[in-house]
Image (cartoon, rainbow, N blue to C red; front, side, top):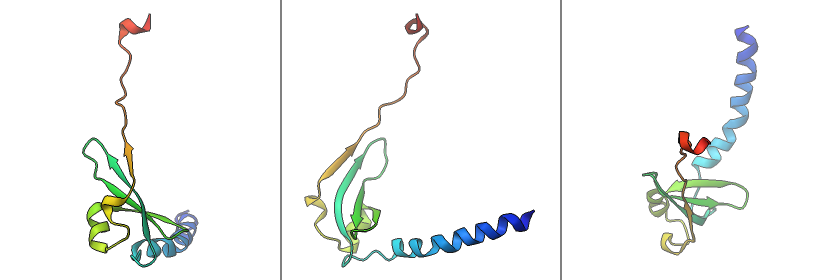
Length: 94
């Protein structure tokens, strides 16, 4: 039984390998910034970069240290806010 699970799992890992390598080797020469995402609730701000085919999210520090273009300050900002979910009070059920 274990062998039946291990073979497809190993095949899946082999197929996902090249995409993982591509994400790690994002260089400023091939990837450019699209927008920055401002998040709430203590989550870090991120920057989305692309090479025209794939998209990668980097932290602000990674973007600045990597020397990506355009400058972080000139990127358009996406503001992501999530409203807290609140269960209705018993009085609201009537």
